[in-house]
Every structure is written in C-alpha cells, then in structure tokens.
Length: 139
Image (cartoon, rainbow, N blue to C red; front, side, top):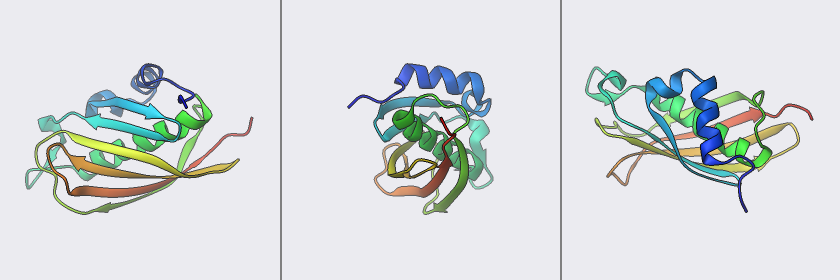
C-alpha cells in the first residue's frame, strides 16, 4: 500500500521546514506505509574528533527517518512531534554515508512508536539502534 505522503513531497517538506536536513545532507530514499529509508551523505562537517560521524548528526538522521515512518501512515501533519528518542550507539561509523531504515512498531490514535537501524554504507553491522515515540495531533 502506498504511503500517505510521497518521497518527493516528504523531501520538499523537510528541506523547507527542518533547517538541519540540508546541513546534514539527508535524502529520502524510500517510503512505505510505516517504513522509510533515508540517507545522510557524508561530509567533513559531520566528523567529530576520532574520525567518526558525530552523534547529534546520527540522532538527527534517525529522528527524521522516524518522522517519515509516521507521516507515511498519517499523512502530512507538521505537528506530529517527537516525544521520546532513545539511541544506542553500537559501533563507530567511519567517514561514509549513513543509511537509516525505519519502521513502525505501534500506531495508536495519539502516539506512534517506531524503531530505526543505522548503517555505514558498505558495512553490515549496525552503527546505532534507535526507538522513538511521536505525538500525533488530534484531527
């Protein structure tokens, strides 16, 4: 089943409304009903000491991915907001693009819970695992 917002619509929306998206180089790869894949293109400004992609950039990528998961189910509702985000950093991502794969765990009337897996391009092992909850605005 098709998502309630297209890849192109979602990408245009986040570029216009979330200033960190263009700074971090986040692109929408795919969206479904309750799934999304995003890509954060590597650039030197994302690196922290030790040669790894900075944690705040990884958290931003995961948050935007979970936003795509939720909006793919409920449509464009700008006021669907993050109420909780938990990230477990599992391994050091090198200087490469990062892929985020998100999916819905539970969609209720007021809350949506999802999870997101982050991978460095070309690597099989997870960089980070994220769970998040979004508040869904009333109709």
